[in-house]
Amino acid sequence: MAVIETFDKVQAVIDEINGSEPKTAADLEQFRIQYLGSKNVIKSLFGLIKEVPNEQKREFGQLVNKAKNTAEAKFEVLKTALESAADEAQAADIDLSAPGEPQALGSRHPLTTTMNRIIRIFERIGFVVEEGPEIEDDWHNFTAMNTPEDHPARDMQDTFYLLNNTEMLLRTHTSSVQARTMTSQKPPIRIIAPGRVYRNETISARSHAQFHQVEGLYIDENVSFADMKQTLLYFAKEMYGPDKEIRLRPSYFPFTEPSAEMDVYWGLETETDYRITKGTGWLEILGCGMVDPNVLENCGIDSEKYTGFAFGMGIERQAMLLYDVGDIRLFFENDVRFLKQFKSAF
Ligand code: PHE
Image (cartoon, rainbow, N blue to C red; front, side, top):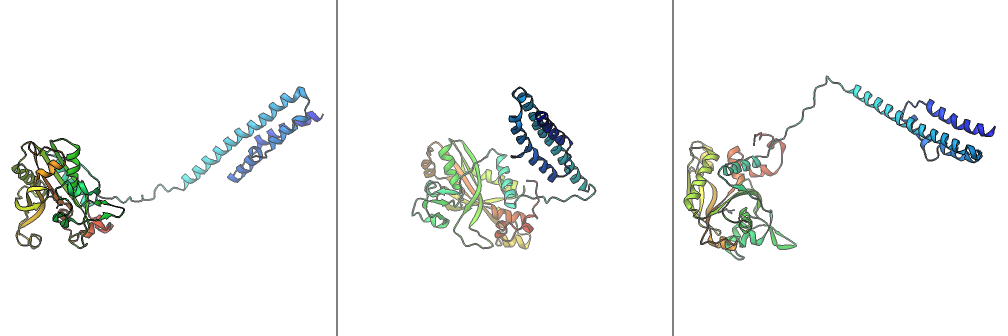
């Protein structure tokens, strides 16, 4: 009699499980605790096995196991049903006729578009992009570029040094990438190096302690000054219009000899032209020259066999011209009202 009751108890629990209909997440949790929790009913049923005679223990065990499996299966079914009901309720809340939320589209920074424009012009005639680190060592930035310590030309490019290692500095020009390329590649070399540079300068509408440059370097046998001039004329026409003229004025850079500065003829048609060219019609765009043999030798290139030219130009000034921006600081303030005026395909 007692044995039958024990079996009945288990069957009653199975029936109870099959019959339960939790409606809410809280009900379901209650179900889980009761039948699957750490102190669940089924565990206590297993305890009853000692009251069952030996020959029926196996059958009893199977029945309790069935109760356990039933609880587990039922729980999964109930859980899925509740979840999909919740999803449906949420979907019903969406108003498909409501207007969409507009996504604000960003645009490229004007310095990026100017830089990309310059890169594309040079890529078309076979220059490839090289990059170097902004935190540079003294050698690549100065010494290799024929500007040894105590050279007066270092004064023109004062910069920021790292406190814990004064051999390291924020590069003052992208010319450091010249040294990096020449020490790691063999001629012919034809690269442009765009990037950010730094100088210890007072920040004003016209100058900033951080700005961008694009460097160019071409080294091969028999590269001449005429090659440089033609390359730069091509650049000026592509960048500013086919009717543009250039002129080269003698200049000085420690790493080029002879050196020049290139002006583009901007004209004197408007008052702005007059102002930005200081009444001359000519506008300075870049510095350039034939790579000094010392630089080639410093970087392990035979200066008897190879010659080359290099140039370096500031991006901000050109972007200010292209987009008629009156204050260089605007480029670095990240003011959306400024930035959203530049929508471009580049
Ligand atoms: N590095 C020079 C500067 O920053 C520019 C330059 C580059 C001049 C290459 C000549 C050759 O002023």
